[in-house]
Amino acid sequence: MIDLIATFIFFFAVIDPIGTVPVFIAVTQQHDAKTRRRIALLATLASASILLFFVVAGKFILTAMKIPLPTFKYCMGIFIAVCKP
Image (cartoon, helix red, strand yellow):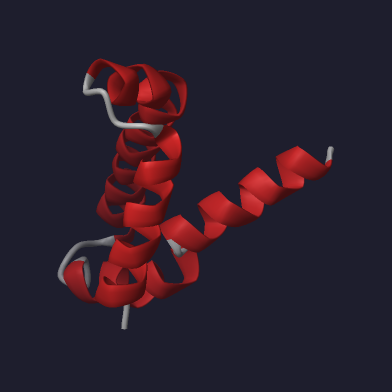
């Protein structure tokens, strides 16, 4: 149960749904409510599909590219620290 909560918190922080709401509103302000709901649903399904694909296949992809998981974690930590304002 602790691992599930930790994973949820990690995904919540990476996806940042609270921070993307203003961007979504700004980009879709010229659309009506029905179109906005459809855009939100399609974007959610697309991003969830991509996220689930890499959750399932990510380790296999890294193994195929001969990148150790700890190295990837360190590099992504540095990348996130440098790129996120």
